[in-house]
Length: 365
Image 1: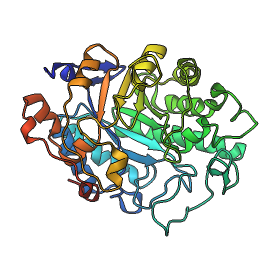
Image 2: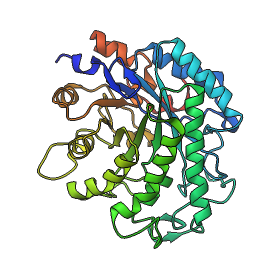
Image 3: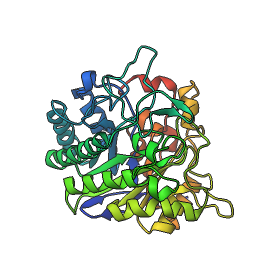
């Protein structure tokens, strides 16, 4: 099958991509004390040199005491900003485009048995899992400060010269904790029984980010149904529920929805083979990114358990892209293992594609 659909240009606002391939955000934890190093910059530059249309960085956290759950996760404020500017410079010098993923982990568990949060944990209801209370709920002041912190990081992203910005609203982290009734039991304006009610916090974050970046810079929002606390969790059980969830976020200023699935080929709702990104585009009418085990025969949760994956056919993905089910394709582990994956796909050098092995998580290749 022709791969031409993957190499069509794409534009949203000021973001002009040479192809439809996005490097998915992947936490790497190679930034001591939260400061990205020259090795981090070189890691991203190699993907730009390899032909990636848009690089989305690993999650990089806003300025809150317990915004990260790993001391080597990068931050996006203070002393880290000049180093992020070097990353942008290196990627641009290689002809690439790059967006930071700005993030807050909320009450998601720390990495490693020894980890302890560095300050008061932000969480809608203090829950770490449904029915499991560990922290105090956020006050109204906490909520306002977190929203402002996202806006400040977005403003910094524009000043540094990033090409777009992505907000991490998926996988059971802070914004997603507000979306999910399993972790949001608040009875004030930041909670509620409806999906639209619980989307209010996320919408306010989007508004703050929009204010920070201005009208012409593209805002991407990453979403998922599944959570690290519960792989079977679902926020929207029906297309109507999905519309209720995403409409306030779209109205707040999201330009592109990054729709995370563990396996991109799985239908989102019964009665249609549309995936999460396909349904989102159909219902909301804005561009979408699909993601989830693209280019590999094994899904990523298994990778953390030590399973490797081999290159897989892209035929089904390309068929969906050709019929405009979604607009962009995010590639994770295949690009982590091989910075030249895009060039090899474009040139038909599929015999040169690399397997993904768990060891790749331990190096910046």
